[in-house]
Image 1 (spheres, helix red, strand yellow):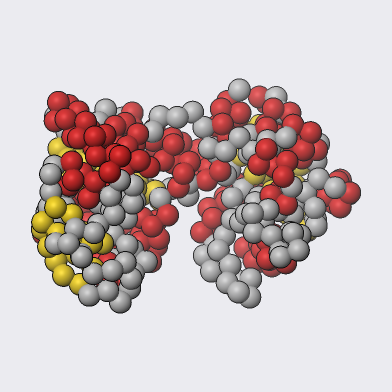
Image 2 (cartoon, one colour; image 1 turned 60 degrees about the vertical axis):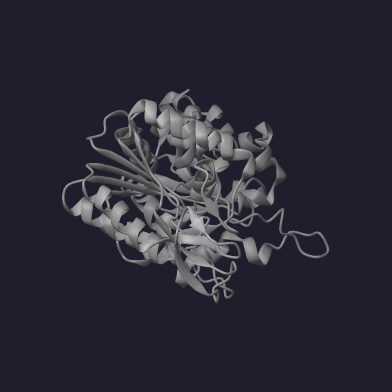
Length: 400
């Protein structure tokens, strides 16, 4: 971060979309902790900080009378926690562009922090409204984007606001810099062998990513429900497993491309199956291409775990995006946990590992392995799109 912020007010877009319990206590402050280095750097350099973020989807989840549920979605719930973490004055404005925000931003002193109210209380935020963005920009001297998780959205506070600052007055925060640097490392200059572990429910969600991985991967490991569409493409019997019939052709074509490119695609040899999609389902293990009617594959099986773990251990670069099974159900979480352990073990042995995507990140956090992998991305959808090779609006706006 090369901008001189001494005596200046820095408007920082952070991603404070943190989970809260019914009493509005933060249950996981990872996103806040990740943003602290940027905030602290600006404060220590003699600047003042104005933070803006969204929290949830307040316009979609309104009260019964159509009003916004301000009590549930206000960022005021985070003020106490921020004061504790930053050990400085943290003011709160009950708006992000109105009189309260303007007055408190003007009065802000060096070393102090102002947290603005939820940007998504305004429809203009998600619409990328220029006037709304202009009002946000007017609050500060410089703009810093440190919200990689929303960099794929052309929203007012993530992208449009940057247009009101010239190149000398806008930059990425430390978190954004790390996200971009690590993603570029695995895509452009990876140490081989490279293994990409891809899970999730649908081939349609991940086919672009899978094809992108053909450019630099040696191995592609497939897990999650999407594996059964591939099984169907290989004329396997998948019982009642979740499949996408309209994607079988795409799966076949991908397997052909992978073979032509010399990339090994590993599908699960066996699956932990349930007789229903429920935590209390009866459980049996079947070969993934011979799942009986009435049963559905809900996790990778023990044989698949061994094969996948061995491949991961032999790798020098590992990218993991997506769970191997229905991770939220204990009976079908073991495959994902085993992959998390294998990635951590490979990292200990010198591999570079990057983990992204909600359930993959949840798995390494739950198992306290986050510090035992090289990098945990804070951006699910954003990391997915960046790895797919798309230009993210939030990144483009800073570079413009």
